[in-house]
Length: 342
Ligand code: PEP
Ligand code: MN
Image (cartoon, rainbow, N blue to C red; front, side, top):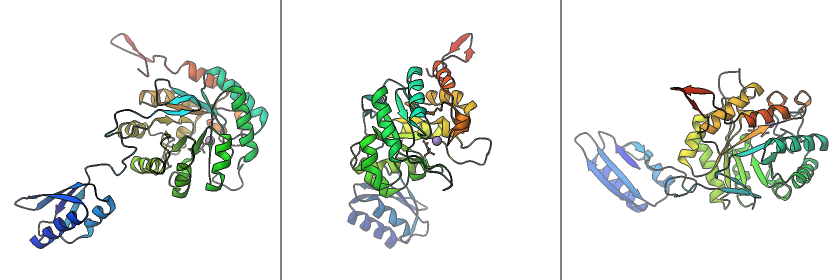
């Protein structure tokens, strides 16, 4: 941390900061310029106690030089994390394709979707049992019945399954049925849930909150890792914006930045990121180019009958085409075809 003192800071105020730094287990490197004094604080004390010095007399600015997240930071970690979800490796060489309905609606719907996405190349199944809906009058999910169906279909197809967990009381039940727990966008900063899921032996997919900064997202991941669960996968699903043409602003800059700042794998969810079926294939290719370790795509056998997120759900044939076209070259440069994803 660099502490910049005010121009009119007194010698006593500077000395007070130096003394306080030593008390907090930091060394003080002082540089007295013509205009002001700058103090470099280096050490292993508590960051919150250090940051509190902004309120001390004579302090003008404090400039952090390290990230507030430690365990999820890429800095100082030689290798990227690979998360093993019942045999499917997220963050390794292979792109991971997670597909399935927004909500589990019936056995027929889930079977049909799972078989279709598997034959198209999906490596994991998704499906919501507990749905975080904006209105209490909208479909809330089939709960434990959906969990049972997910387990049954996962066992039959061999596709590991990820499903959302909304409350601390449901963690054991969901973990008993699912291979991976999803913490949804709306719960990204539900700290009680993060702490509880940190104690669960299942891997976790942590979605980015609808208006969370990358730092807040990584600090939420830090709760999971610091709490004892190192198997965390981040998921970019778009943030709120001023434009109503799309459901969210699918933020691939932040996806790339999250992979830059953290060693954790990052999945892209262009279904929620755009909210529009027509944009999902192209944004899937863009996400792969940006470095995504995988995609999460909503698929429904009959989107016009979907109980949630029909407008962004692909029909099975559309998903199959999306997978087929994921790496097709779309442009030439100097007569040479450029393969998207290279
Ligand atoms: C979902 O995956 O169905 C979902 C509700 O996602 P999000 O939390 O990103 O809105
Ligand atoms: Mn959905």
